[in-house]
Image 1 (cartoon, rainbow, N blue to C red):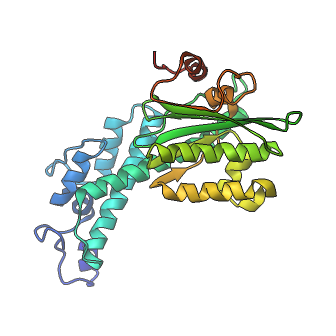
Image 2 (image 1 turned 60 degrees about the vertical axis):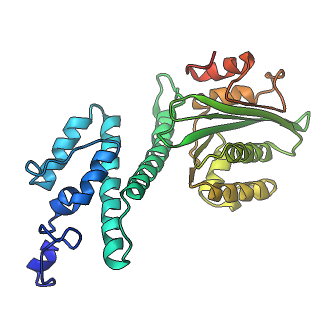
Image 3 (image 1 turned 45 degrees about the horizontal axis):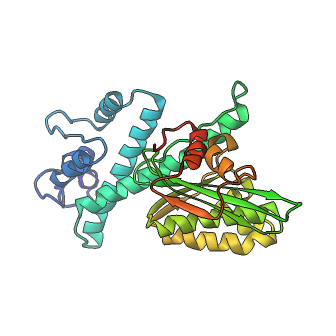
Length: 305
């Protein structure tokens, strides 16, 4: 409103929400009374100091320096601030143009969901680069998803001689805690179909558990490229299965499907392998048997006793 006033496009520079202070950039994103609850109630638990925050650029630099201790921390802080400002702006516009009252809890939820989805998608490119360019170890480790997402890892194996294979699903939360797993045997015509079925089982198990925010991770480049691009990129036998998977994805509040190298998908890779014959057509929830603990240890994470 200050900018519009200076350009003779507004009769007043006063904030249309609080009707007290002029609406500068600093006021819109930091100093308007309703915004303080957004910054303090969010992941940064930042308490806005009205007297200290006189410069937008200075505030950004100070906040980055206070919360970013590594490149990964800096990326998380920058993305969280960006999405916070975006949803503060959107809430402000909705009340002005659509007369929709501001709900700070909904704004915080939108920020959390957007930020988590972005950070979940980011490892796709970085993981791919590490896998392609790192010659020293070539390893990518499994990582827990950001809150409030769950990570559903899926994989499949196929044997032409037996005309079928196995699919496996392992579900863990944002702390890396085991939630559920399943392994199924099936008869299918090719490996692409088996891998597509693994994705379907990952969605089905997540739906049964009542998940709303899902990261479905697979090392099947064909399945993931079809889900993220066009189903016509894959073979026709897998088309109807992947089409159902896309419909499943729409049932969740937020869903993404990053590709992960096999080295970051070792637990479910072992679970779906032909060598894991003692576990088949069974689902485990909350507490895995000792044999499945051995599977989970493939990712090098702490497992339930």
